[in-house]
Length: 293
Length: 301
Image 1 (cartoon, rainbow over the protein chains, first blue to last red):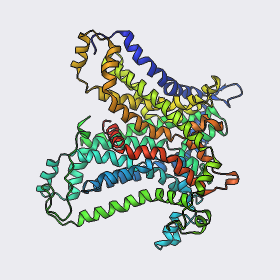
Image 2: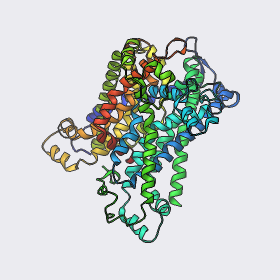
Image 3: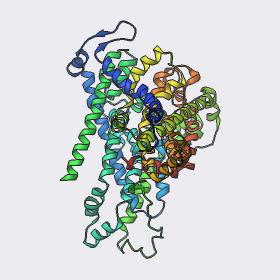
Image 4: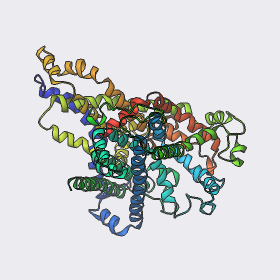
């Protein structure tokens, strides 16, 4: 603590940031919580309905549950592509001698591009008429039977809208994991190798335990980002066909701004926040416990 | 910076045929060749869609509709770029994105630095609690703020303004910025502050004369990392902005989907290429700083 500080100076430095943060983040959270107990379309009088919105959401709304499970599927695909892909590529990269910087740059490239552009790009890649990149490649390598309109087929659409999100950020997580892998002490690896450890043992016994703290951070990042995924599904399919690619976030958005049901939309967004908090708690619990074991 | 990002020793690049360096013992190079092939393959898959995007923006329409997507364009034409500028409002969109990015970054850097200074350097009784409050903003998804802000904005007439985008973008980015500045301020030795205090400098002068000038590197990191997300923000702009004159790039691009879903793909792709260029250039020029920023941002968590 600075000797000459006064209470006033603390306030001078702290109040402006707290004000912005309060207006943009804290107050809206409380407001959502408040609104979730009302029925309101933005024009007529607000009507207090108690827990009716929550009861309806959890027991009477098929679309909500559909979106919830879709969101879990979306999250799973994103996590596998982002974290799995990142760990794999980062490990490969450490065995590379030249061109690491180039690979890092190229791999991170998609993260710089806006989601609208990515949505355009992938709509074309998935299209069948005119034939898009993906179907062309499938025909080319002799898997022509798999060709399909990926975005209008109810069985593939969820995977099709998840993949671009995974593709977009895998480079970011790769960078982080790669930096952590480089920090693993060479002496440890050397010693293990002298003791006759193979590559797999080296990875599971030395490298992975060493990067576990970073792994926890990236898992939390990827999970919270996956749960708030919105842009790409919204832009590519708007949740369709039917509700087969509807996520909680897109459902909330439509409830709020298409059906202007602000109360119920707030209920859904409160659920999304709770879901994020639960997910973070769960990850911390699981990964921390494994570290202790 | 922490040990995670501390100066990293890279193995000296050596041609594969030369005798293996000390730490890699002589061993069959199958694994290494295999991983090299895999890396190249993965990078191609990762980058190809972007290359394809660029190539398509140079094709003429006939070539695009009938041609093989892997072939090089039969003739290079810049017509698409001309049409891209005619269809949309690209100049205005880029300007708007620029204004929003600058405005939000200014708030993020200045307020982030101030909060970190109060939390880390000045210190006060409830600083743990305040830190906890800011942590919420990292975990909570931005969608929670859409409905409340929409209602609040319409009651104070802020809908459809630059501020309506800047406020939530800055607010949600603030915690990470505070976090990065705090962990940097930890490394400014306490003696510096004590010496300045003995010389009679108060907290404001110390902030202006010591903390601020020392933080340049962290400022660059914070600005670069946030710019990626702010420049590309879709959800706040889409929710709060209606008029053409205020649309940022992501919204402007949507104009290219014409009536009845008929899309002029080659012109659209040209527009996409134009809009990603500014950020791409910054990224390629400053990619060392940006990569370092992204790495340190997370490894410190």
